[in-house]
Image (cartoon, rainbow, N blue to C red):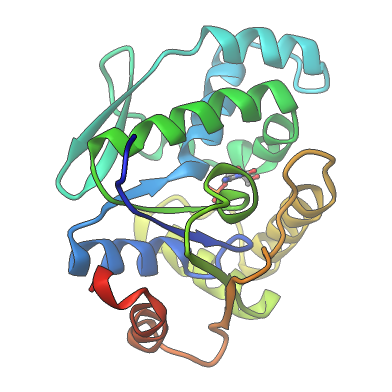
Length: 225
Ligand code: DC
């Protein structure tokens, strides 16, 4: 039996999950796992293969072919496809617009969920996503639901895109794209975005990163720190 620990951090796009998860992981020596990147890789590979994104069967057939190699590296689980790191190729507006169409499919979710569960073999994990506390690791005692206003989330995402040089529009366009994605993610049939019982909700609209990290750290089981 694998006794490695998991911190689950879920919430909508732009709530600050990545920054918080990375810092908490670094403080504790837990590997950071970005589960959204796995759905983005599936989406990217479907687009590269020219799959019709309105055809669920074609998406599932393509997703079954995608081989994602996972390696613990520099405090995180790094992903490789065909020996290459996807990098910003999975952060484009086109992938933003199509990822939730891929992530809503049960067969794709089953593949990603199995991959995520297998990662506990590498060590303790801090996993960010949408269904980590409800579906992937529901038994963990460390569950957090990070939220923020739509305005705060859009402003954050836009800033990140500008910093990376991949901004496709202004804050309003980012907000519209993010709300459209959140709607599908929250209303889908399988493993929708939601807070689990016993999870700690943190609204980061008016908190800085350090305050959110401190809130998470303070709520962890005492023998994890
Ligand atoms: O967090 P992100 O924006 O990189 O996520 C990309 C997409 O994958 C988004 O539509 C939400 C979805 N996702 C999901 O359904 N379940 C997860 N555990 C993580 C992400």
